Structures are given as C-alpha cells and as structure tokens.
Image (cartoon, rainbow, N blue to C red):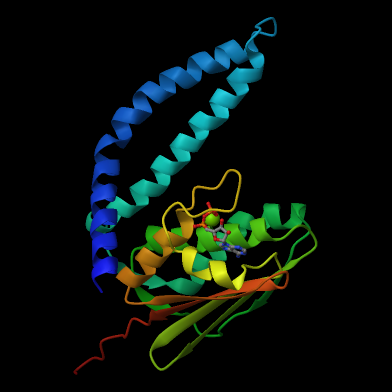
Length: 231
Ligand code: ADP
Ligand code: MG
C-alpha cells in the first residue's frame, strides 16, 4: 500500500530528525523555562497571566519531544525475552494512585502462566502506559478499567477495556494517525507510537469502541518460544 509506505517513511524520517534536534531544543528551553518561572513568581508582574500559559506550552513542547523520541529508539534499543505479565503489573502499579484518586475500579483477569514475549521492555511498557492513560482520560469518574490477559496458539492477548466516553465509529480510523487528538492538552502521538511499537514486535492492536459505552483495546503479540533442549 503506497500511502502507508509513504506515511511510515515520513514517520521514520520525522523520528530521526526529532532525535537529532531534541537535545538542541531542550537546552534553550530549560533556560527559557527557568526565566519564565522566575517571572511567574513575581507577583507584581503585569504579565503573570501569560507566564503560566508560556510555561504550560513549554511543557507541551517537551511532551511532544519525549513522545517523538520513543520513535527513534527502536533502532538503538535491544530486544530481550520479557515477562509481559510483569511489565503490565508494573504499569498498573504506576497508575494505582491515579486510579484510586479518580475512583476508577480496576478489574483483573490474568493468565495464570507468565506470558513471555521477545522485545524491548521500555517500548512495551510505553505502549501499556499510553493505553492505560487513554483509558483513564476517557473515564469521567466512577468507571472501570478491565484488564484481561491470556494466550492462544502462540500469541499473548491483552485486553484493556474502559467504560469511558468511547470513540464514534467514523473517527476510529483516525486514532492511529499522528497528531490526531480530541483532547485540549493531547499530543495525538500515543496510539500512533503504540501501534508502531506493537507492529515492530510482530503484533497487532485492535480497537473496539462504542460511543458513550467504552473502548476495548486488544493487543496480540507473538509469544517467545523457549528453544527446547536437544532440538
Ligand atoms: P492523545 O491521548 O494525546 O489525544 P492518543 O494517540 O493517545 O493521543 O489518542 C488519540 C485519540 O484517540 C484521543 O485523543 C481520543 O480521541 C482517542 N482515544 C484513544 N484511546 C481512547 C479511549 N480509551 N477512549 C476514548 N477515546 C480514545
Ligand atoms: Mg494518549
């Protein structure tokens, strides 16, 4: 598919450029951020209304750079045998406080056996962070996030479902597009990056969503087969 090839070429180039200039952009931004903070602390300043805004926009630039950096890492980072179950547990532990604060109930139905895949731990972790973050952001309050993991025919299946606002059918196709966001402070990069990472691991992401009901994200990742002794 020509359009997709062109798009992935563009993304690869964008990732390389982002990695190259990220540090160059970040250094002056740190300086700007420092001075803006100083100005913000000056209660007499007539510009206080703007300094806060400038600071939040600087944070936004920083977030976009961080997310783009994930794109350029696949080339450099290594793959190992990973315990997927452990990574998922880590991610949910990371969101524990936020889930509790937002009164979101977590329902877990996990595979009894550990699920091993072959991949890059940081990237896989990033995928789960992106998806769980979206789930939490989609829920107003008092919702549930359901996590199911299992395996079948050499694949690990992870399902993360939320009872959030859902995605209208006609917008489903846009979710993986770079910069597509419906959020005031979103970057629109999380799902695009997750999709790229999972594909690089030989897997696929599937989205099932119903407006005002919720969203279910299913990941299918090849299990890492242990090489049998003597084989
Ligand atoms: P961002 O979260 O920065 O907006 P993402 O790439 O993570 O960017 O997601 C893109 C868009 O897809 C979101 O803005 C939202 O509209 C939609 N989306 C993704 N996940 C969910 C979800 N679990 N529930 C509802 N909408 C979602
Ligand atoms: Mg997101």
